[in-house]
Each structure stands twice: as C-alpha cells, then as structure tokens.
Length: 564
Image (cartoon, rainbow, N blue to C red; front, side):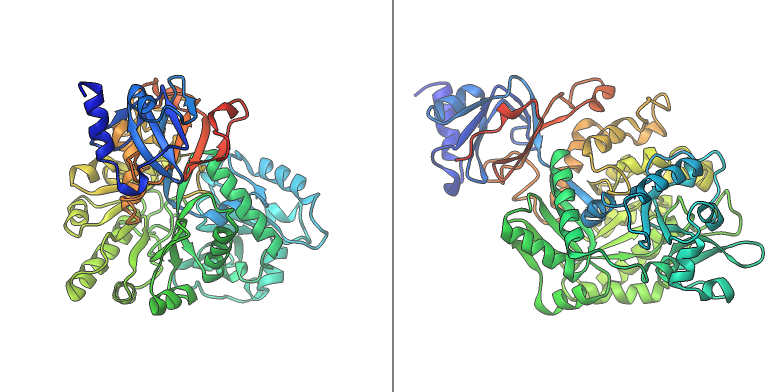
C-alpha cells in the first residue's frame, strides 16, 4: 500500500473504536472549516449515527466508504454547529408571541405596532411587548406612561426594553398591578430604580429590580403558550445554524420542560442551562448534584447571577459617574459582601458560577468575589465566567487570566451600542469596553453568543461584528475601535470550540473531529474568505444535529440525506 492508501489506512486506524464502521452518508467536495488544529480545513466528512466518523479529502472518503450515499457539497462551506454561549431560549419564544418593537425609531412607530397587535387580543388582556430602545429615537429620553395612555387608557400595557433591564408601563398597568405606586412615595427597591417626574410620580419606566413591582402581577403564560414558545425558539435557532445554546438563567419548571422535550425527541439543540440565581432550581441541584448530558441534549451544572444592570438604561455599575449623567454610577443588584457569600455558597455546591456584569464596577465586584471564594475554597469545578464583561478597567483584564476566568461576550452588543456608548463612558473609559482583542492578548478565553432575544439569534451577525466592528452599512469606516477586531478564525472558534469549552463540552462538541457529535452547518457563502459585506448575505442552507438534518433552506433540500 503506497501514497494515499497508506494515509487512508493511518487515518482509519486513528478513528475511535465506537465510530469505526460503515457510514450512513458522506459529504464530499466541500470546504470544511473544522476548528480542529490537527486538520483545520478538509473536503469531506463521513457520518454514522450521531457521530462524525472520518474527516479528510474527497478521495480518501469516497475510497473508504464507496457504498455510502454521497452528498455533493459543490464547493460549499461547512462549519461546526454554532453554539450561542449566552442566550434566553424561552425569552426568544415568548417574544415571538408578543408585540415585537425591535427596530422602532420613534414612539409613534411603537404605538402603531401596538395598535395592530392589540387587535388580536381579548378585550381585558394585558398588551405585552419587547424591543424598544430610546437611544434609537430622535429624542433619546425615556418615554412616559402618558404616551401609552393616549392610545390605551384602559388596557394594561407592559413593554420590556431591548436589553431586558427596563420596562415601560401605562397607567392602567400600574393601577392594576400596584396602585400604591400612583398615590404613595414607595422607595426604590434594592438594585432597582423607579423613574419619577418632578413631582415624584412614576413616569412609567422601571429599571432592573423595580420591574418586579409590576411584572409579578402579570398573568403567567398558559401551558399551550409555553409549549408553542419553546417550539418556535428551537426552530428559529436551528434555522440560524445553532446546534447549542447556553440558556442564561432558568427555573426548575423550565428545566423540567426541557427534559420533557428531550424525552419527546423535539429538542434539536444541546442546552447548557444556568439555573436562575438562588432559588428552587439552585437548591435542588445543590442537593441532588448536576444534571449531566441528559439524553445527550441537556446539562445543568452552573448558576447565573446578576451584579448590575445594562449600559443602555444606565443601570450598569460604574467606578465613576456616567459621562452623560453626572451623579449616576448605575446600580448594584447586591451589596459586595452579600454577593461574595452567594458566590462562595454556589462554588461549595459544585456550580460553575456565571455572573452578569456590564459596568467596570460590576466587573470588579465579581472579580473580587470570585477571588475570595477561590482563595477560601481552593480548587473548585473551575471555568467560572463573567457574562458580558462589557466595560473593564484596564488593570482588571489581567485578573481574568490570573483567576482563569472565561469572558462570555456578545459581539453584536458592540455594534448595537457603538452609536452612544462613548457618550455614556467618555473617550478614555470606552477603550476598555467590548475589548475582545485585549482579552485574547491577556490569555483569556472568549465564548461568544448573542443574548437573544436582546439581539438577533443569527450567529453570522455576531461573526460579522467580531471581525469588522461595523454595522450593516459598513459604518464606521475601518471599524469602531478597530484594534479590538478579531480574525475570522478567532471569531469562529469563539462561537464553536471555545463556547463548548465554556460548558465543559469541548471533547464532544465544537469542532469537526472524528468521534464528536455530527453537529454542523452548510452555508451559502464561504464566510472565511468572502468580502465582509457578503457575510451578511450568507444563508444557512442546512443545519445538522447529531447527524440528522433539522433545518434546510427551501432551495437546498438535496443537501439533506434520506433518513436511515
């Protein structure tokens, strides 16, 4: 045996025992970006069951599996299934059942959308929506309840801001949920803020913990709505090439719903779930231990905490005043000593700790708490994460590396916020914001996501943002603080292998490697070589989950093999 035959034999001998054998199908004539340093680019791949059997050249694969069905990729690009390292799956699904206010450019446009949506509602039902952002309006100020009262004097209206850290209510909603807010001087809750007018009356905007003053009185969605929300969210994720999602904060009832979907075979995502704070789910998994790889699709071994709010609603906790709001340094959701105790308790229970921290003060409080817990407890489960890590003081980047933390970030946050972020932070502090390159230079691992439904679930938008730091029109020329841009290889790794690493799953997911799950995506354009603007034109032609085609573009049915 000479030449290619010897190479083929060597490759076959290196295959894991459990995946040797006949292939169910073979993809040939493609451009496979494997994210596997041992073989970064390949032409072909064989799949058996839910695993990758072999990766190599078209000649090698057709010789090895001559009897298997062949799928001709015709030069198309294939990448590992995208993993969103920070998202809200049920939030996405429920948002599809409510008024969608994303992209609205004025209060008038919002009111028009709400009028249209309200036509389908029962007369007495709450009108719920999400997606407004005052930073996109001609007058960049928070709205008032009176603006909603003019159109909806009787129907309660509750509209969550795009970031999920503020909400806008009309008078009917306040009156139905908490009428004392209109007649008494109720103080701000810890970690929250009620926006008030000059007379001290609530304007209708509630920030962070203050949102609960209204939200807890809204009727919960029905069982049918929850089932439909999950179905829609999974379908949308698959349509965008997602095969994995890190669900950032879920209660016990939601986790049970996910288990039922796994049992029913309808969950075509690998979910890595962070339990929501110190609640029933935390207590349950602290007592019973983690849920690992349930049905190959569900893992629960981490907790999601919040330390501050969001930059857009000025709830992110800063070390110095907001540049555009003197006297305001944002909000801490917990006192530092209380938060440190929370972190220590979670690490003692064996949880990976993942904390939402956006402002530089919030980030520092988290770093201090992690450092204290690690010093007290010694070795823990490790791979603790800072979710968003959006604004970081220069001296704190090195601490991420020293504590072996993961920066779980969302590239589209930068390109959504870049129009006003410098107004909030000033020209010096903004250099430590959305600083992906700085993290990598300090040896910190990045795990990328979208934070959907805050941003689109489409990971290609995040990939584009990571390598350009521009919007869809190519603004600003050269990119916003372009020294923080990533290479295409770095961005792809952050959405695949390093996202898997952030969930302790790098040996099963994240690269096109023999023995791993056959989770992969066929794309209409080669995102690793086309001009950047063409990335935004790229479509997912087919999404494969565990070797099974779970989504295909209507024009690409031939890419999906017949069911074995």
